Image 1 (cartoon, rainbow, N blue to C red):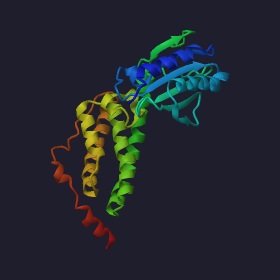
Image 2 (tube, helix red, strand yellow):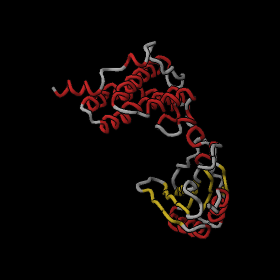
Image 3 (cartoon, helix red, strand yellow):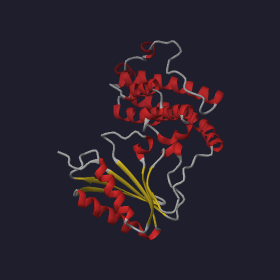
Image 4 (tube, rainbow, N blue to C red):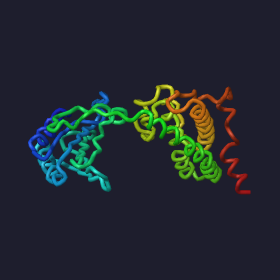
Amino acid sequence: MNQVTRTDVIEVLRHALERSDAVDAAWEGGSAAFDAADDLSDVDAVAVVADDAIDATFAQVESALHALSPVTLRHDVAATTGYAQKFYRLRDAGEFLVVDFVLIRRSDPLLFREVELHGRGRTWFDRRGILVESRLDAANDIALARARVPALASAFAMFQHLVTKERLRGRAVDALTFYQSWTLRPLVEALRLLHCPQRRVFGLRYLARDLPAAACAEVEALAFVRDLDDLAVKHERARRWFDRCIERLVVAGPGSGLPDAGTDGVPAMALRPPAAAEARRRVRR
């Protein structure tokens, strides 16, 4: 039975950070910053510290967590710029109540405070008044989003053959990998450009939060592929939806809203190409 609660973890983190003079500010981000935390959410803690206090602050926090419950696993995120990040699992906190802890160097301007990207973090303390809510430059961001459209469209058009080629060869894993990378992810980026262009780089994460329910349901249907025949149908559906998205992006621009996922009145079964097994036999002749 889990003995450590989310409230316990937050209190320990907050007190440990507040006791250190090297820590300027601390807050909770992640799902809490979007008022979306639930029983399965982890704890996303962020703090700004003196540049030379990163290691000492991690050590203080780890000691405090260990006093609450033994730390059974720690993962250090490598190759970060301007911040350091570690994940912790506590023995008595259960599988999902993981601590995601980020330390930002005082000299670094990156504070993850843009509301459109990071929500509204729950401030624990702010000794220097640095946790000012900020927003993206809307005009510049839309310009960047608009500039992304040609490259997105050309890459999509160039690489769809990879999915088809590997499907016809009967290489299911290869075909599915290319489908995820070169079809589904670009499609979702196009959907984000139309519906929430500020969050266009978030990929397949947070779709239920960011997209309308109908669009999210269609993406889910396209993402779960049963076999190579099913892949052929869903690949065609995804291609047609992407084309509709690009058409709208070109005409109306980012943020103009989603087209439906329809196929211009063509029933889904009519899109089915020859059965995968038969197609593969023709390729091998």
